[in-house]
Image (cartoon, rainbow, N blue to C red; front, side, top):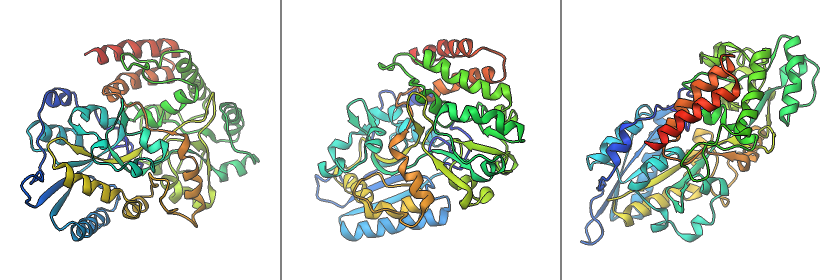
Length: 421
């Protein structure tokens, strides 16, 4: 499972350079049967992944959706195929290039630019009343240029979370809201044998959940507005990385995590030695902290308060039976139908009209309250490649091998070369 979307893996999906070549200029043919012109029975094939971590429950959800849909739409048959998260882009890119791709596929925002030439814009099948019902965060996260390229069916958020036990242990009764607040905790936590922050510099991690939130909080962006170059090496980027390197230099964040990612149970986070983190979510730490000790805070504020969250969406690929596939996508996206998927995976609705999934759960309510502050990351085709060249330079700065300015300058030069290819 990749961290680009789902919370429990800590390994970033590897960018697949062959995709750009494999997808370029391909006239796609989906797997659907009738195109509606001949009056025959239409068919839809969808590829998805274990969104609900219990694969049996994930399968039961989709089996139930298919059964319910086919009762309402007797002229359309649906086949849902579930694939592993690992290497999903390789499998999908190869299938699309060979004309054997699915009609509908579950995608997350950073995949959309790469597949944009192969996706049917949602405007071709999404009802106007449904589009107006999506939250700003959900709709923005699936919009590339002027086109909505997916139908959101769930959302997630990574707010700042703090361990109440650590704050109690040092006699601190207020939780950080700003960069300055967290920085002020550094010396105090260190003196008492704790860390103010858990930050991972492991280059295998997605920067969406590590460095980018700080960059956004500083008022910066990963890419320039035209997408033709990067912007992370500007003053905001230097400010964000300088802030972070101070935590590393002063020992306010675990040094081991700057280069490695051990199993969570082996980390200071699980051992109750870390005050706050934004690289884990409540479900990760609950077995170690206990629900009663998880304090959910909005993302830290530098210039602004921004955190990472994502959106799971269903996209239609060109060559599909637009009418049949559109009916299926719109059916799944109904709030009452998406609810069991969202709740089963611990996520949140993408539509404003959806019922509250967690009316008696204060912890989930607190996370949901932070959704408007979330950013799904840059929607640029080379976003993952840029991460690949930026992550080692960030790590070099955190380890004191380069200044923040030099690290970001080197990364920008390499990233701009990637974008130009």
